Length: 198
Image 1: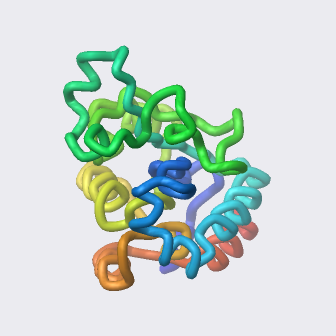
Image 2 (image 1 turned 180 degrees about the horizontal axis):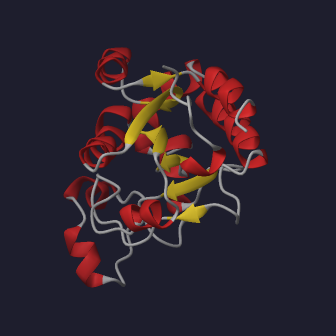
């Protein structure tokens, strides 16, 4: 069975985990994934997929990581590494979406406090509100925040699929490990399937 068999456009959503400049531009975190990010053409693949998905009215959900010191209670809950390296800091370029990835029609997850995008956030409520059945994942890093989020949502009963060439991590070994663990699809295959949705 194909990932989109018996699925309509309003049954599915694409979730983008931390598609932000901290990962895709000149930061220390970018250096960690740069080799995979560039060799797999992750940025262009994602842009092309989003263009088709939006034309078909597929729900696009953005799950950024934002470190806001003004929200002291939420900031205390955020894991130490992002705080140590000053990544994803609110009101700086590090927290901004990568150019072209976000549109105002997208839904933004709020309240996130952990590597798992469900932790402290309204992501699960968003999915229930829109009666989503099937989820596709893009973003960073494949073996950490993306995988952690998928694990939670799989345990909630959602069908979750990794978009292999719209994700990246530190090396091919880690990427391949996650691709084998979860159902996965290439962006060009997903584009074809979305284009054929009723």
